[in-house]
Image (tube, rainbow, N blue to C red; front, side, top):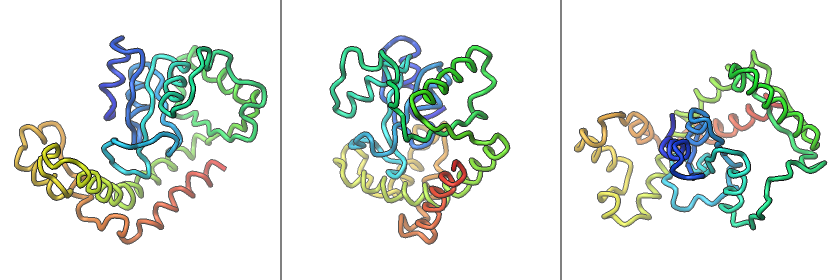
Length: 238
C-alpha cells in the first residue's frame, strides 16, 4: 500500500502518536487511509527534502501520519520549523481563513465508506466553504479518464527520467560504504541482480530498468509531457 506502510502501521498499533512518511504518489495517503489514519501530502516544496531517498524530486515530499487532523497539523508545523502553539488547530477555521483558495473535491475517491463517513466529509466541505474556500467538484464521469491519462504519461515520460537523474545524484552524495559502492542506476541494477534472494524476492526492478534506458531530464519529450500533465490537472479542475 505504499512505501510508508510501516509508519502508518506503527501509528495504528499505538507505537507512536504520529510518524513521518515520504510520498511520490500515494505512499503517505494510501497507507494512512488503509489504517484509518490521517495522512497529509503537503504542497510540493512546503517541506525540506534533504535526506529523502528520491524517486522523483519534482514530486517527492515528506508528510505527517497521525490518528487525527490536529496532530497531523502540529507535526506539519514542527517539520516546517514553525512555532507550534499548545492550542494549534483547536479552534477550527477562522472566518475568511480560506478566502481565495480553490480546493478540488474528488468525490469518486471519497464515497462508499458509510453514511457517517460521508456525513463528516460533507461537514468538512461545509466548514471550508464557510471559511471562504471555492470548492471545485471533479465530475465523476471525468475522474477515471483524468487519472488514467496522467498516469499513462507520467511513468514513461516523466517519473522514469527524473528517477534516473535524482537517484544517481543521491548515490554520488553518499559514503560509498553506505550504498554498497553504487554510484549509478546501472550499479544498483547489477547489485540487485547479484543478490536476488535479498533484493528481488518480493519485487522486480522493472522501473529501474525502464529508467536506466532514459537520458534523464534530457530525454526526448520529458519537458513537454511534464508541462502537459500540469496543465491537464489544472485545466480539468478549472
